[in-house]
Length: 203
Image (cartoon, rainbow, N blue to C red; front, top):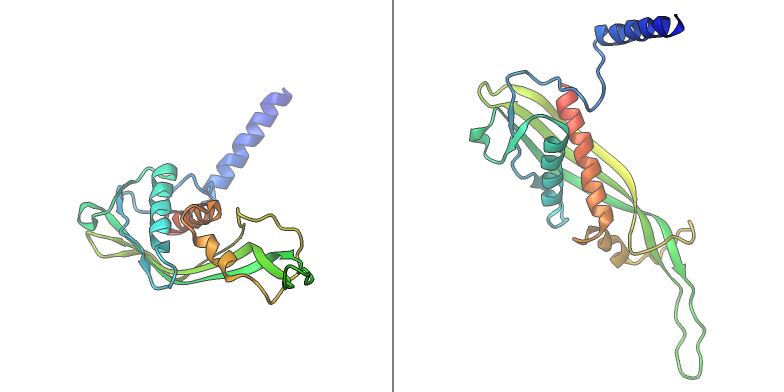
């Protein structure tokens, strides 16, 4: 009897939730039913970060294929809708540092100054994003202020302190954008997840 009552209660809750128009994030799309194929041309890159648009475009395509039922193409003429984006700005702010103490001068070696290398970064990306229905030119989604922000630890370093230093190696910041850094791949994946969710669920 208790199981029956619990089952009925659960059914009532489900009906009430879906009746109010809510849906499970990441599991349903609010785009028109006529949209089956989405074209994703390469994002424009208005920043000085080399090839960042390639990483973000590839991750967005992968996310659409993995998490939605849409077919993805690169040619807008072969699609029902076109997703265009522009990377307007990208900021990387060092958060954590690994400090290397200096050494005093010896008879055989000069003194060395202390230095610090960044071990964790706060990445902020601002984009303009538009999804347009190709047949009607109707704008299905648009924002000129899509903001992505997240923290990442550099794979090359292990943080030993949280103190800041004015002598931060520029190479440690630049290393975040090296092709093989896992943090860059994680950033692109996280960016794509939020972008696809925004475009497909917030129509």
